[in-house]
Length: 401
View 1 (tube, one colour):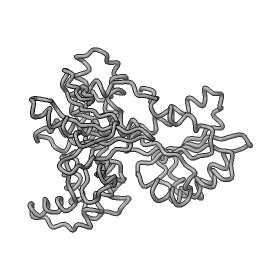
View 2 (view 1 turned 90 degrees about the vertical axis):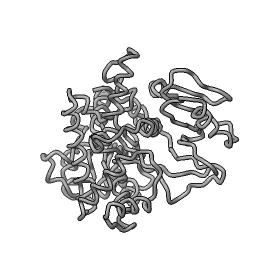
View 3 (view 1 turned 180 degrees about the vertical axis):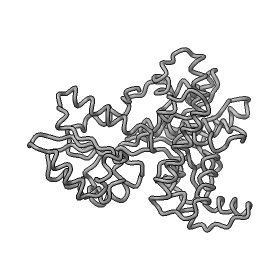
């Protein structure tokens, strides 16, 4: 397993701070591994085992610690002196009223707390109510392509391109790289998918119509990077003789997003400088799920590449929106602090009409922030200050600190 330095360098400054460190991400995307890597670093800094307490709440050994009182009692019994303790709580959402006991430890004990969760609403409800302003959060994604190449120790250009084809098909879930054949990969991803559906959606939100949920999930996961509204999804179900209310669709899309199975990208009016409501694009947290659900369907390489670029921007710490113009759109507006970049994604710049479409999209944008066109072409088409890059080269380039 590789050291996930991208995240460690962000979390490191907070190791000894009282702010609660929150790692949010898709189930089995690597959050637990990052916790163990943090623990390893603490041990190298001479923190002894006695002052490091790690609990994985999906481990049956801790089945009795699923409420705030029992967890509070367990931890207090472990703390036998006044030195700083480092508390690691993995999949904390499995503990009833967890936010109360976490806040109590933070307020009354000499501790540094790290928690992970598979539900994005840890930050929007529980945390916001009890420890608002007392946490720092980190969005954990499956392996980026550069991490894949590091894991597989690939440097040869031909092997990199082979690995990228595999990445498009099977995604970047860390443990899938331990599977040696397609059947094993598919079985592994199916297991994760079923676990997310049952644990993070059906049980958490008390879903009754599981068949409808599966149909909505399948529709969204097999049409990545497409602009649509719940109204269009309602029409789709009507076309296959299935009546569904708009409220149900809105709720189910929200549940799927909160389980971190998909990202919802909002549309941003570039001229009006405001977020637009009603129509969104959804991107898969990991493309491997498209492969297991759309078997036998035609591949949509353009959409898959757009999805990969979106995920990469998220992993690099950008806030990402879809750019809306009067007569078109920019694929991505990515912002991070005072930095902003625009990104267009195409499979290939196959002829002059495609080149014109991708580059001319920037004509109505008058600012001087960097503008990119990314494609699978190896020839450099950069012009008029607009930077063209090969997608693989862009994915593998070193990030700015």
